Figure 1 (cartoon, rainbow, N blue to C red):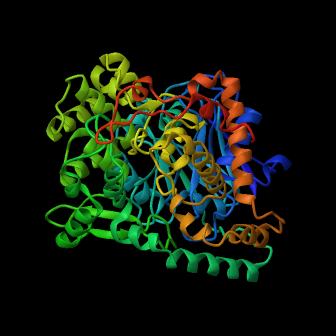
Figure 2: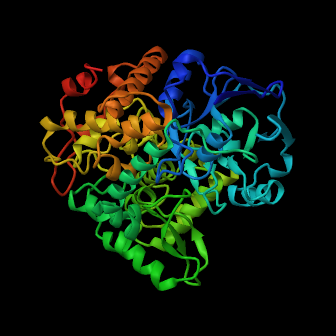
Length: 569
């Protein structure tokens, strides 16, 4: 494995050996290590001293189910802190087969322009191709043109118009196994960072590549079988296969924690129309391109993704996820899956984070810029973003900026990043995660909704959140999807067994949480150097005083718990 280092100013590629302190890290953990080693925390996110880093997890490259994810990171223009955003699709698998431990993109061009960076394993080279013809083009058409040019075997990471406009809600999209740019590293504005490097797309051409070497192939095969059996026999796998992530809608509603009308209520009267059950019935009824069980990565056994088709069966968007349904559905008072799907497509095509934009539109509703339930007006506002109008730019910069400009206090965000679709006053453990994670309000950094606790009891949330945060930082470091935990957690020895078989490393049973502990410790240190303090580990003040129906509860986890959660790292 090698470090591939690209300088976009002089358009050069260097291939370097992996430093010793980087060797036993991958994914999110390696990003944190590189950021501490190489990126000045006080740098400008869109300036030359920030770096854009791509890092596959430690177990990526072997088509372990749900374990071929790519982590992308840098300093966030949204939060001002360290940022890791991960995605499925092809990119991680291709990088691993190319022998790329990490790709570090540094500096910035001294002249305006837009480029496609073609990384070739066969030639061990980087080729820059002018992308002026792709400027302003949506990700779907861009991906189609790039696949036509470079072939359907490559992996592609690309940005849309939102990234080119350097909007803080812009993400980086990746091709799925079907060549659709649907797998977005959405959170934190990394699409804007990619644009600041002058890049419209990166082509990962793994022609001649092979799977990473395995120290003990037989032991790896046995551990893989044990993991796959545990995953497939877990009842949660069947739920996600049949209903997708939108299965969470009814569960959140049951807890009184489904964000509704800009987080003013925890229940939505039209939840049944946007539930996983409704989605599955609609998809099966329409047929055609529609598919309720779709894999975003080759080899994934869970298949929690979906293809949502219209009445004619032709694909509208893939996938339609719970986070989008929550933020652009119940949060906006919209109860139609068709309307949400079309909003989702538009956001995707612009290369934007549906969570951040959904939250910004909720703030716009609060300000009277649109009315709750008005899907047509929501689409008009998305058009404003694409047209780069002043109002569009405000919304495209995310919920926090939108709230400041529009004079709205009820902004569901921490560290400048919008909350995903779990109300922290009803599911208080996720509130602790939203408040204290170095990443900002991100449910994938420590989900507690399945913890066997009273979610309304403030005294038990710190422990639940800490355990979840350590686990997820560990999963992000090995390259595993959040849903793979159904298999890995069932057989606690399987991750150490896989690591030993893959690398020959002897690691303890506590390895997953050890990785998570090391990762979060590095992230918090980087944020500390960037100027973050305890006051940044808080939910918005209005959530501590405004009761949330139907339980009429506030977020009342003590500040002492928030301040001390990581004391023993």
